[in-house]
Amino acid sequence: MFKPTSPGTRYLSLALGCAAVAALALAPIPALAEEAAEAAPEMLSQANANILWTLLAGVLVMFMQAGFALVEAGFTRAKNAGNIMMKNFLDFSAGTPIYFLIGYALMFGDDIGGFLGSSGFALSGATGLEADGQWTLTFWFFQSVFAATAATIVSGAMAERTKFGTYILVSIVVTGLIYPISGHWAWGGGWLSGMGFIDFAGSTVVHSVGGWVALAGAMVLGPRLGKYSPDGKAKAIPGHNIPMAGLGVFILWFGWFGFNPGSTVTADGTIGYIAVNTSLAACAGMVAAMITAWIRFGKPDMSMAMNGALAGLVAITAGCYELSPIGSLIVGFGAGILVVLSVVFIDQVLKVDDPVGAVSVHGVCGAFGTLMVGLFASPDYGSATGLFYGGEIGQFITQLIGVASVFVWAFGTGFILMQLLKSVFGLRVSAEEELKGLDITEHGSEAYSGFQIFSNE
Image 1: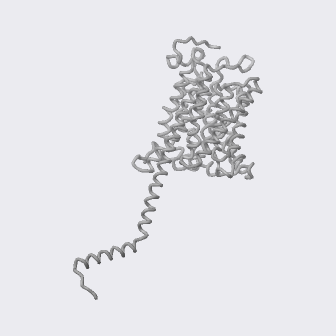
Image 2: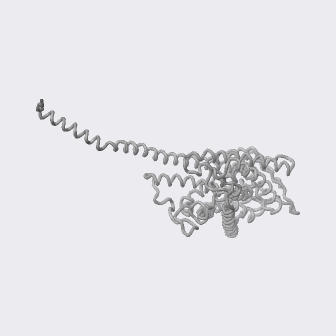
Image 3: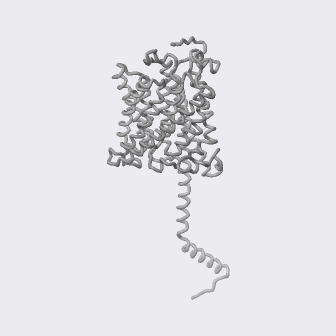
């Protein structure tokens, strides 16, 4: 028998019924909301991880400046050690603001004809309040330490006889113009990238550019006093502190784990195998250089072996994402042999005085490593297939075009720059200043105050 209910009960029943209908009708919404809530933090987490990884890698690459300074100072004489340190400081301190104002825009700005960028000067439009701006600022920092690396390579080949003030201008032009423009061709959407040129972390884009400008500088400067006998025979001018140079090599090796894996600018699983390839190539390069020097000179020369490690690192930088670990060993070993032969050829045949072997390590081995991508790129790893893995020769030809064009650009502009600075400001110190040492004559102090330093001139 039906019994009428009270008004309050009827209202309560009606409310419960509406709630039930709404729950049925909107049943999918909580699931979608939950998925969105899960997806948003995941996307945010990945973006933040990328920023953190790229920043950490940039810090590691910045620490490579210390490695370069120690290698260059150790491989040169005590009377010039402070000058070497100052030039490495200025590569970063003078070059970074120029890269901020001009260089980054030329390298990564809106493309003009495949040749250079045209936007983002002084990072205009990027702020720390927006996610895009935060990423742009982080990416700029990472790229700025790469620019400093390209510039600091030059100082080693020009060591012990270059005017300090003029060298600062060299560093500024390399960081602000020479490096960014060719860098745009390969990394900024320029004509080389359009061809499919591969240089993942900069064997050519960074290292060869520095090496070829260094070659131009060493040629224009001429050799150090006492480097060649009257009959043209090369004489060794030993560095004053091999342990210092060795520590510098270890620091560079350590920093390279930011240089190569960091070039992913993404915190993902590829950074592990890139680190593996990087380390294996360095090990193979040092062993190969040591063996080659042992055969060539009768002793396992320390400086050659150290440069062999750097040669392996430079060579694998282009293909660290593309090669297998076995390929990395092969490329690193080849670079270790090549760097010894190149140092001897440049020193004794070309008669170009490069106190630290910068041209051989960075210019020659950077070109070698870039070419090897066309041969050893493994389809199981990166984005290309090398000729030795069944690929076509087209990739190797593209690599060759990239290497050749960057050589013409970097050496050509470097040579013009050095000649211009030589004519306007003077590039080389006087013979008296060179004999006394640049620490005293250029900076008014000694790196090792209180010690008697003898010249071997």
